[in-house]
Amino acid sequence: MQFIDLKAQYEQVKIRIDKRISAVLAHGQYILGPEVSELEYQLAEYVGVKHVITCANGTDALQIALMTLGVGQGDAVIVPTFTFFASAEVIALTGATPIFIDSDPDTFNVSVEKLEATIEHVHTKSELNLKAIMAVDLFGQPADYPNINQIAKKHNLKVIEDAAQGFGGQIGTQKAGSFADIATTSFFPAKPLGCYGDGGAVFTNNDEYAELMRSIRVHGKGVDKYDNIRIGLNSRLDTIQAAVLLEKLAIFPQELKRRNEIALLYTKLFMDKPEIKAPVCKNGYTSSWAQYTLLAKNTRRTILQQRAKNQNIPTAVYYATCMHQQTVFKGLKSGDFDFSVAENIAKRCFSLPMHPYLTDADVKRVAESILSD
Ligand SMILES: *Cc1c(COP(=O)(O)O)cnc(C)c1O
Image (cartoon, rainbow, N blue to C red; front, side):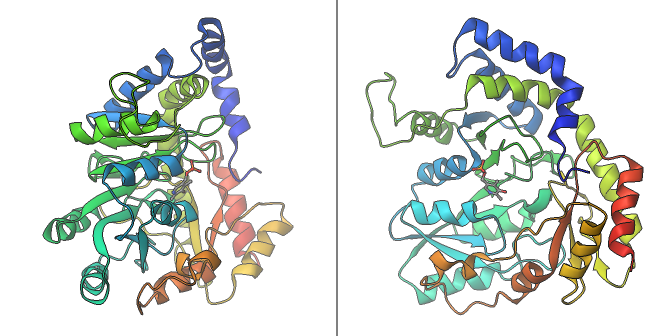
C-alpha cells in the first residue's frame, strides 16, 4: 500500500496526460506557453477568484504574496507554529519577523481564540510593524476565515491564506484560495492537486495585487520584459507542468469526492476508540484531506505506527517539530506565548495513507492494523 499513490492516478489519466505533454513538445513554448494561461483561467473558474498567477512552487507563491503586500525589514507576520516550515521561512526570508501562534486543538489550524492576544502583544511589547496574518489550511481543512478576517479588519491587517494543502477545501460553498487578500497553493506532487515536478499559484480578487504578482514572478518586469521596474523573482510554472495539471484538474472533483468518502470511513472506524482521536472537520467545512491525521493517546504514537509498519502499511508524522522549536528560529524573540496545544499535537500526531485510489478494503486494513493489539 502506498502512502500517496501517484502511479495509480497516472494509470487513470495516462493517455490524456501523455497527449498533453506531446502537444507541448510539438509547439515548443516551454515557458509561459498557452497551457499556462489555460490553466490559470480554469483555476480561477474552479476557485471562484478573479486572478490566478501560477509560479514555480508553493514557497515562492508565499514569498510573492508577502512581497506584494510590501512585507520586509521591521515588519511582523503572524503564522501558526504548527505548520510546514515554508510558511514561516518565507516571512524571515523577506527580512520580516514571524510571530508564532498556537493551534486549535480540534482542527490543528491557527487558534482564533489566541489571535487578539497575540496581536496585542506585538503592538505593545515590540517595535515591529505588524502587517499580516498568514493562516494555513492544514491537512486540507480551511482555517476559520470568517473570524480571522473579522479580527484582521479590526486591526488593519492583511490576510494570506496558505492553501498549499487546502486546495479543494470549502467553507459552505466557497472554495479554498478565495478566503484572504491573497491565497497561495502548491502543486508539489504529493499535494491534493499535484504536478510532476514543482509548481505553485497565487490567487486574488485585487487587480493591483495581480499586476504586481505578474511582474514579481518575472524579475519585476514592467510593460516591456527588459524594463525591470522592481526586484522580483524567476518563478514561472513550466508549460509541461501546466499541461499535466490541466488533465489532473479535470478529474480533481471526482478525486476529492473519493477522498472525502475515505476520510468518512476512516473516521467511522476510529470513532470512540480509546487510543486515538480522529480528526475533526468543522460543521460547514469541507477538507481536501491532504492528510488524514490522528492523535495518539499520550505517548502511544510509536506503538501505533509500529503496528501499521508490521502490516507493511506506511504512516508519517507531520509535524514533530513546531516552528518555535526549530533550531533556526530558537533565537527569535517571539514573546512568552503559550504553545501548549501545538506542542501536544506535535508529540501525538501521525498520518495514514490517503489518496483517492484506496479501496474501502484498504481503509479497513489500515484501521485494523492501528487498532489491533
Ligand atoms: C508544501 C507546503 C508549502 C510549500 O510548497 P512547495 O511547493 O513545496 O514549495 C507551503 N506551505 C505548506 C503548508 C505546505 O504544505
